[in-house]
Length: 235
Image 1: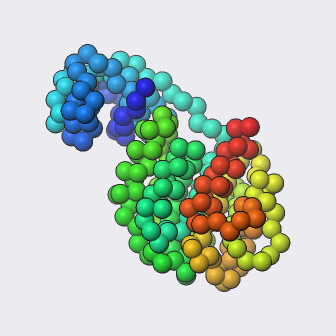
Image 2: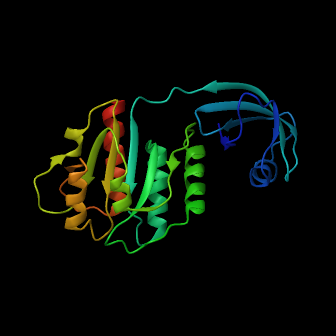
Image 3: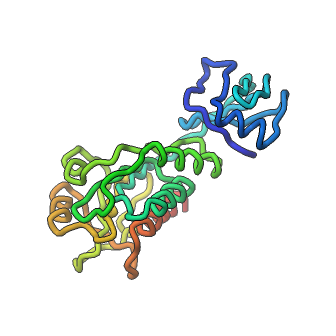
């Protein structure tokens, strides 16, 4: 099975036309023809079966045949991760976290961040592609990049954790996690959070956690955290 993506698709629509990029891929690359069935996710948990009415590489027209709703998991994982110096590493993190099961991602700019900007449009495409490839029907929410200070000043609920490298007493993340809870995890840049940022996070209710004995890269730490949370909730 192969998924396609259309965020505007809902039960009020019986026929629609896919965008030029998806249309070209379906008709030119996959060589789908009139009468073929497509599986299309809207990123909100619905999977639609649609029959091709017009196999045009610029405007592939389809008719909805049926739909199915996937029940969303009980926990919500929000990864708040500083952009990496090399953009491809951050894209790798987004791809793998989407495949594993992240619900929300916020890039945060920290005092020691070497990359201060991110191209959200490019990152959105990475997340969409990973959602389709992994056959998931929910598209993770990708927020705009914000300064860490601004993020910490916003209201956060659920279990709040910060993974940092300072020599302090920490509990392993896997021992802090409880199933079926909302969880937010802060992951810093290559140079780690500053002491001031760590103290600020503590003041906002974030608890320090360890991701293991090894010193991990930003993107690796985020994937380890994502995997731990999903193992606890799906075990």
